[in-house]
Amino acid sequence: MDENNNKIEEQKERRGGQKDRFGRGLVTGVVISVLIMGCLTMGWNLFQRMEQGVGLFEKDYESQETVASVQEKTSKVKQIENIINENFLFDVDQSQVEEYIYKGIMAGLGDPYSTYYTEEEFSALMEDIEGVYYGIGVQASQSYETMESTIVQVYENSPAEEAGLKKGDIIYEVNGENVQTQDLNEIVSKIKGEEGTTVHLKCYRPETEEYVDVDVERRSIEIDTVSSEMLSDNIGYIKISSFDGVTADQFKEALNDLEEQQMEGLIIDLRDNLGGLVDSVVEIADWMLPEGTIVYTEDKNGEGETYSSDAEHQFTKPLAVLVNGYSASASEIFAGAIQSYGTGTLVGTKTFGKGIVQNTYPLGDGSAVKMTVSRYFTPDGVCIHGEGIEPDVEVELPEELKSKPVLTSEEDVQLNEAIRVVQEKME
Image 1: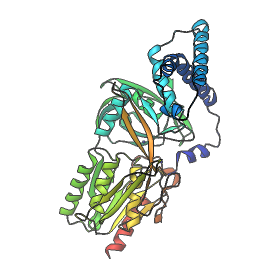
Image 2 (image 1 turned 90 degrees about the vertical axis):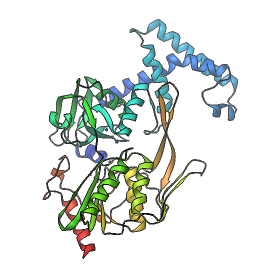
Image 3 (image 1 turned 90 degrees about the horizontal axis):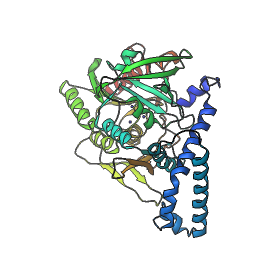
Image 4 (image 1 turned 30 degrees about the horizontal axis):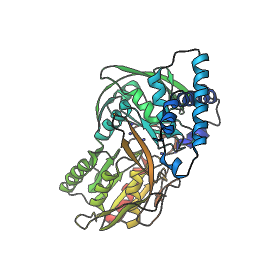
């Protein structure tokens, strides 16, 4: 669902500050309280480690944090732990509390893209990257500001499509649990499960301003991240839904197939593509671009890595790339490079604007942490984080069509404009 076209923030504005039927403020307070309680209750052992010289963060010692300060924190944690033990009404799930310690550390960074994965969550993430998992067949994105998790793609012939879920639905509950303020990865792990079981979702549908309850069967979902067809006038069309481990090979196969059909121009559709693996998008871009830089990164020390294309492959036929507000991250790497080199024309609406890179670090027990480690820059030296990429030709979908999972050829004005652009180049 791994994750941006009117942005999620715009959906929020269109609802005009509508009263949150689920009590967003109260739930936020409760979740934060639980998070803090978890950190404090189990934090005793961690602060004991600090006293013993192990320390959670070496940086604390590099900045010469005093032993007295550490002892003060330890004493406060122990005091709160005693209060909880003496007064807390309910039983404490120690394993859950421990997990929230680690989640709390990452949440304290204040970065929505940095998170802790439990063993189950990390396993689910790896399934997504591999392109096969047991789930319902949707892709979702989470707003940085509102924390709303919105379905941005419903896969054809999936359990989600059969149950009536639609693009644009906002996920509010999973099996009766309010998930408004939870990290998207947590929500995904709750939706996935054993094949043949069902998951109950409550979603808000902005299109009709109503809440929808559905039961969706979990099934084995094998995602074809690339689809293709030959349009009229020998214009090839390739849709990339995400950049996963299987995507580069699927793309090359689709491109070769279109070439064998005497393709004279090409449209690559990155709309609603939330991104994925850097290596995957770089491998695809290498097949399309002339020799030179595709993207480069810089970390907090000004160091980084440059990803380049060689001279072995280059696409020289007329090309248009479709983008929208849900084209993010790896999609923006590709779109930015195409625009920088003038290899093709970007058509659609401004992209999401995620110009930062995360690394995932397994912790040895099946769990892992993911955190933001660098910014990335287009070949022109532009970091588009928070800004997005403006298309060369701007075309908005009519409002009533933005939530439709599949558009007819007549309805898709963005695709029709891309066809016009390619035809003009061909002539």
